[in-house]
Image 1 (cartoon, rainbow, N blue to C red):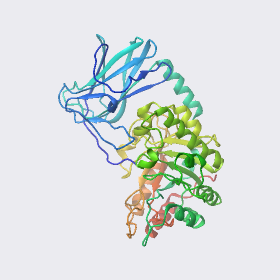
Image 2: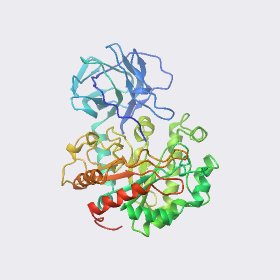
Image 3: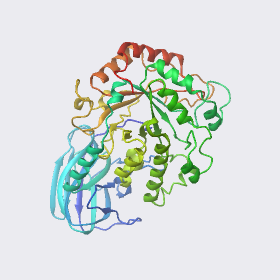
Image 4: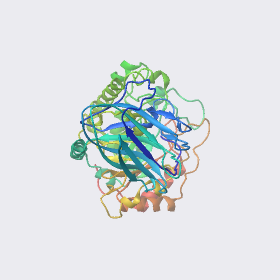
Length: 480
């Protein structure tokens, strides 16, 4: 999960021209003819006082702390084929003195970026000839540029094709809306018991009481569960030969995912899985090819996800993929192939890549996950999610996606403290019910993250809070 909620005043000038050289250690990226191409600021040549936000291994952050107009980011690129390319930028703006100027050779495009928050700013189209070009970004507004994430290049015909294909392949999340709300559990290799020594991961998997857990979820009134399979340490709670082939010792003999799906389904509750790429786990990350060959990394990723989907079929209702904005998007993955792998074994499986509060990353997923621990409404784009609407954003950065809000009910995403009880919930019953009722009238899906002990139990106070909430908002509209 992402940490922090930084907002900034942003002003932007983008200069695109041919013939400017700079030091670059990697082979120049190619602006492709058939797809969208992302140029991530972190991989450009950064000059001046502007700095890269270090987000740790396996992630690409934004460029921040811009000073005067001499600060810049420069890329050397190759254009695959001559044509007209639309240019856009993902950036954050406070709405004051934000502008984009784009120069291609001696031609210029200008576009304001006055809307607050993270946005994809459409800057117009230019004709690019095949071959090498140099692309430079610098600050040109009356206020210094604060944060810059990416530039995107895409032919209008490619954009239309991808949008149409993505819309055709999108699946319905109405069953999640009808469920009223779901519960998320970060039950991981780092989860701690209420007291006493922590069990090894596979011992904890073996002892996990799925019927007791499913009874708790049923009493809490949730219509679906998002259960973590990897977070910080990369482990999977069941057998998986693909993972074993990459790094032995990261799977378990007991199939907890299958057992949990069966126990939940008997109570008319569906199961989704949370998946983290594992970049914080050095032994695992060294085996992923990420630092050597991104195409091999994404091929391996698809094999893992496909193998899980094949094993569980219809029992697996959805995927919650973390770090979509910072580990996947910057490296131009084949989103269509990734989502096809995620739906293997169940074509109706909902798929979502976590973009944090950044705009939609591609056309090939169903839900904006809305990671928003404190449930701050300004991050939900409620102006584009009218009461009585469809539950899909009608405009703004997430246009077309089903709305979900992922929030903390307890103090942390999981229970990671030794010999300490779970703290009291963040909300009173009245506060939680008010938030739920507003979400439900907009057909937004609340996903409530609950701390869980290593034995699969939760805080009695949290359970009572959720019981009260379900009583107030009423039963699910339908059963699976």
